[in-house]
Length: 229
Image 1 (cartoon, rainbow, N blue to C red):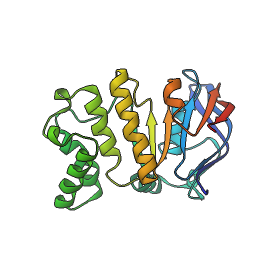
Image 2: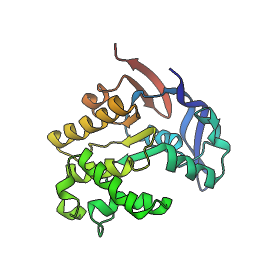
Image 3: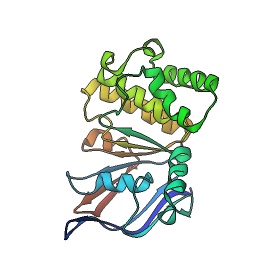
Image 4: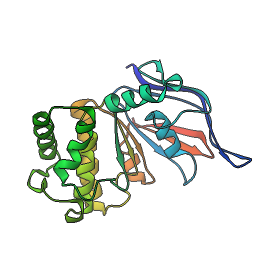
């Protein structure tokens, strides 16, 4: 199966005053279309930095990042924003919902910025809320939702532009085990039924085992890789 993401010799170095702090060192990685990939490793090993590079939120200091065989490390900010909008959906540990907006309006927000017609915004948002089982909670604000419901809202928001890739950074980190399982069930369903490429950063061995392949990072390097038989 063809690759949807490819990294070649990627390094990321942050400059803190006069000190250089390497976050990633010589990363070579291929992610296949519709694959479920888990990224694991201790805190500070570069997991979130790697996710940010794949998601066009940052550029490598050295090396190349390809999406659909296009070298995005050479793209300008507008080109990167276009890739993010069309190709990538993000799910974060802390949800990042707008507290003053209802679940429905939170999901509509990316479509508002994209200039989607108003009727289409509402129709698609309601469909996505139904997909994640929140059609009866659409008019509730985040403070009126449980942690699991907030994360389901975040997943629905990530799907508004029908992305080919979902990047999930510790998506169950703030949830109890029951809610965490429900969230993983939704993400796995998107992968299996819609063919969405799923890349999950996690400390949880149970979640990592739901992936087809796990890569382990330490000190900014891939030290091991395992594939599920």
